Image (cartoon, rainbow, N blue to C red; front, side, top):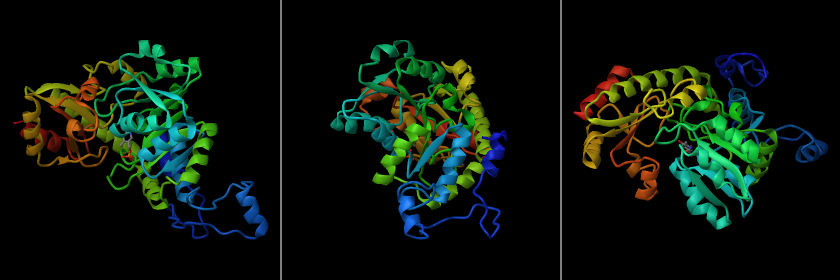
Length: 388
Ligand SMILES: *Cc1c(COP(=O)(O)O)cnc(C)c1O
């Protein structure tokens, strides 16, 4: 690993040039690769050679993308997936056995929650949830069959912050794996391996692509664990396409400057909302009013692109707000150049029961704003007129 800065690596880390001396990374749309002779074919399949065989296993574009993410996260190895959920599922499926137990923070992405509660039980994998502000009690939840601790920070959609260093130490003390979904921060704002994470998962669909074009996922971390994930993935086939990897690699070249602006805009919007009479509360990691502001400052470079707030007046007022925005779009994505407003209770987290939603702070009037890269005055202007 060289000493170049993050921004430089994101641009200058690339494949060796071909005989055409291209400046930008070429796209390798090929499903398979040729062998020189019988011995090459045998040795390649015996894994005596580090080379591409078939694009379900590896491809120059997916390898280049993964290598970039590894440099950004300071990870040894990684594997790229067709979506963030493919990365989440494959990581657990590769590492867990029937009878194992997961310890997860309660506040997690809706589909991950559904995976833990609706699907894993049929393979006899159970999950216990701990509260974001209940790290003192987490050791009480550890069972003999607990294999790993799983968290997101900041969380979706409540932008809660969890102390990664504390969890990293607990995991180490009990010999558990520590896995972090780092999608809300991006590798530019936070690198969980530094706090003891064994694996880091991203939905590349969000800030990594950042332009609302492709679905992708990636898991990076210890080479030993990634090898197990690779063995599972090359057989089951959740692999990222070369085309999407090529798009993402280009996107990563501008990650730092995009995320800087996302964070500047989000902080300004959060400060504006904090003083608005029609807003009950605002949550953004870099507001001093955030319950875990000090932890956010310790582990993140800036607060990220998502601001959560509650419109005064409950569901009715919330609906009026969503029907009144004109510039901002109603959509389910986040981390896009375009600012997006989402109603978690009726969309991303609608599969949770109302009680489960309230446990993680998702009220009916809660709005999640993914603050984009439009001019901040236009973003604030639209939200101001929609609040009325
Ligand atoms: C979106 C998201 C995922 C899933 O990613 P997809 O690319 O949509 O499959 C996982 N975790 C978090 C925190 C997310 O926001």
